[in-house]
Image (cartoon, rainbow, N blue to C red; front, side, top):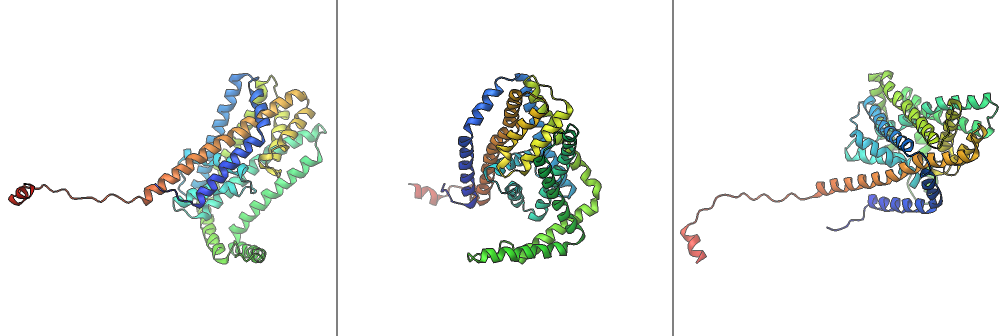
Length: 370
């Protein structure tokens, strides 16, 4: 069977190389994480891993509930959990401000011949629900830090940026809801500006008017589906988003407990929310380097011994960042092989059916044999 060089295979090879590069670059941290995990209470750490598995499953349910809210046929929930893990891997291996995380869903939608516009709305609603659920715990955590006079300026500034990002997303949905033509005008302006920049290199605009018009039509169809089913259809996705934050809080609590530290509710929420704030808002993929430092700083300022804070941070990041990243790589390999098999089945030429009719031996046949 001949090997065809396709764009998807090139991306696949690039992500494999990025996976190996990430493991090689951070091998020192990974060795320390393994060493630390071996010191914890094993059955508590196993419980934390099971909670992580439940959180991944809940992410699949969250995506499925958003699909159903838009009256879209979702993929299998097992596949949605795989796609979530793939987004965790791709967003680290090929960071692009969260855009790369949408690509697995877009690729899967094209396979099922589903319009891209509604899939973008699914991912946009996912981000809005995620930021909003996180904002509840972030407000509680920052309030706790404010009460004990331990709120820092960088925590406030990042929280404001996260709030503004959430407001921009909600505002974009509001404009699309009330005036899709205005959104189309904004996108056309962005397309013209991008066309001027790409025109310097003799390249066409990445947002031509035809593509924008198609996207607006698909977007309008998705919003009409929400209008028909009503806002109450988003209640189930909101509950899944809230449950996800609770499960992640539980993981941090269990990891600390595995090393003999029982975090109070205020310390737990403040540490988790500030850590997630830097997970989202820092320029490095997954907040590498920033989340570790801020978690140690916050827990240390809230009375957790520095050595315990370091151990908890390494174990927590090992379970919630590196483990999904590694699992996402294998999920991506499965997903890529699955698509390749579908391509082979679609392009395979069915064998010619030869009608086998009973033959009778005639004299001519006998004579020809002799």
